[in-house]
Image 1: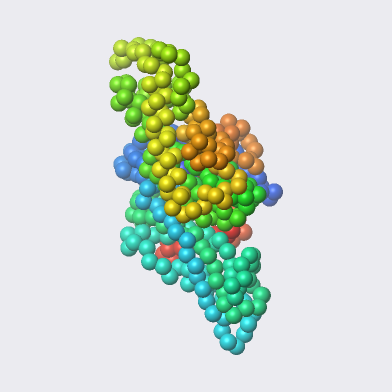
Image 2 (image 1 turned 135 degrees about the horizontal axis):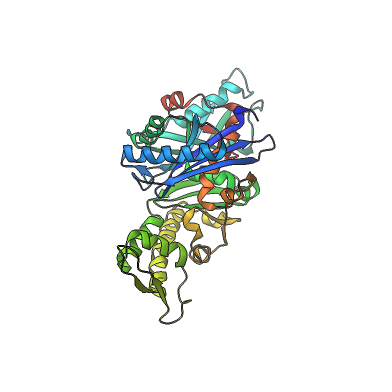
Length: 404
């Protein structure tokens, strides 16, 4: 097993910090060698708010991953998220010089530069620019323009950017612990690499990664990434609602949500109660099951309806032939797929990482989809290894190809 084939994906989530050690294989599959995780503290809505505390949790997750995989972790691919991350689509265009009519490598680089010439907030940095389509003299569907004849070359890109200091804080926190950060990757982009196949991307699909502090999403239409973003709402907000509504501690509310909660209403028997046993510091309590489900339902509905409004603005929903793929920890809520189908009016599927071997408990757990996806991202980038995070951040751009 060559060292170059070992990749570590690190996700700093609001509820948990997860480090996945994987081996990338020549056939495009991934073998999970070990998963380390730790409760997340010092992180709010996917962003670090307490540097020292978050650093301790990151160290704990990495040490756990090292012990379980028997691999010393020296570098990671870091997943990032947060409500500050935005995206848009942009087209670059150049005219081919008069003295020739064949498109060459230089033109390819120039159209990339043209697409970069776009204004974003001064405090932001580019995270990704993903190629969607090429056009030569107005002809679409061009996969590789090099060597073709034409007078004008255009290219559409999906551009993702976010507040530079917030992203750099995550990078710095990891580096303080020890590992080098090889690249930063937007979480829903990473998750999509392992929960979607190329056919689903071609048919059109929406991936919704429902985490503790954020709900991340990404949309593919005709094989190209068209829309992405993050809502600053997640499972922790639901837990807080339960804690306040039922007047129980947060830890009890979280356990109640996971073990007993459902987003579906009307299924509980009239007057059906759930007994919370008394423990040290907690006197015990009975809560009405339908009340619990109502709280869970209301927050889940609010999240999905807000997401639908965002997607309606871009008009991509009618083109999602493969439907909705739900992943992340909150996708484990009972009935969440049925609620999504009702709100979006299309099939919704619960999903996890595919084309993965090794620890079954890891890749079949939707909580790890983004972290495993970071390894798949690294594997796809392997033929043209990134020039290094420092240099990439100086140029403030990262180009990916249509398979993303």
